[in-house]
Image (cartoon, rainbow over all chains, first blue to last red; front, top):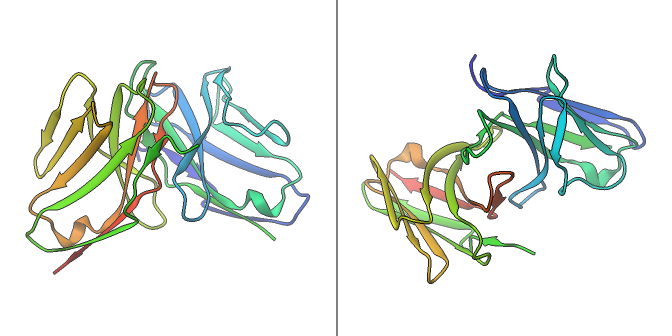
Length: 114
Length: 111
């Protein structure tokens, strides 16, 4: 599968637990973006990463949310102490290089906080 | 602050006819525009894009038109097919770091 991979596809967490969402970009892509989609809304940008660097995190909530893209392995979006308002679909996208406008999306992780 | 707007939440079209999906934007710094198609429980799939230096881009049954003075773009699908039924998102970029998405238009193509 040469596409963007995300896991898990569905994640259920109780309030106060931690959620870890993983994203493996397309082969040859070194730029990763995370977006969040709330019900009945469009996708909202959260963070843009390259390997070992956060380039733009202007869309990330200031608390409880963090992201990383290590030298080896997938990109991780981490949400600590989840609340019901964090319930959403989280999409990862990748692109091959800076200056490329087209981003290719994974299938998303649907997070439900109970 | 919604910088990209899709004012029609839904659109129904007969198979074989033209589908026209509209999108407006407010930020004059946007220089690249994209359309994505999304099926339920899947991620958005890139369809077609246009640079702000052009006013039209065509790819098979899909054509995107850009009117910079009106800050308006549209996606034309002709002929429409039942498999085109999906949610269509308009997106815009001002620097390739991130995309600004509209809220989507649900297209239903009636056989």
